[in-house]
Length: 115
Length: 109
Image 1: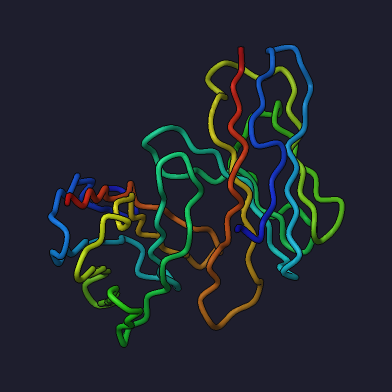
Image 2: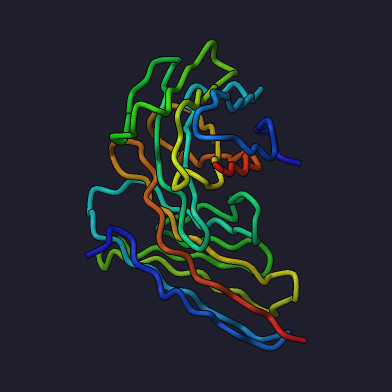
């Protein structure tokens, strides 16, 4: 069982819909991430939140809007998506700080299909 | 040149075989190194962190050579359940994880 929980597991939406993906972790991690993964490709980083502040936006289109309401929650708001946005969306979290390696722990993802 | 390069495979091996995966990275300032395993249509799961001194976890041994910017993963006595994609992952000094393309392993009975 993953310690990072994502909902929903599957989402089908039209190009005009607005929906949100949710991610929750209770490991006390202060860094949280959104990734997009297409079939047979590695995950691609979208956003990084560090101590609830957006620290990295990898030039993601504005139709994806992240939000970090508190240290345990991370949302990804979706609006006016395109068919090419269909993918597996993964949330991850990690400890912050220097020193020892900081592996990221992934949720099991939301499989998104845009009609 | 990709920042993290892996042989995509597939590696098809019989049960009980020993198999080795290699990975190279281009940024000498990289700080942390990991192997993740990803099953089909599942999330990546941390297999092991990789240290310069080398580390072992059961049948799995990981090595890091900072001078050559090279990482390896050795799997001994392969099991059917080892079939998956193995992702070489490097954490840079910005904190971002850089993923290799993944190496596919298929263990056959």
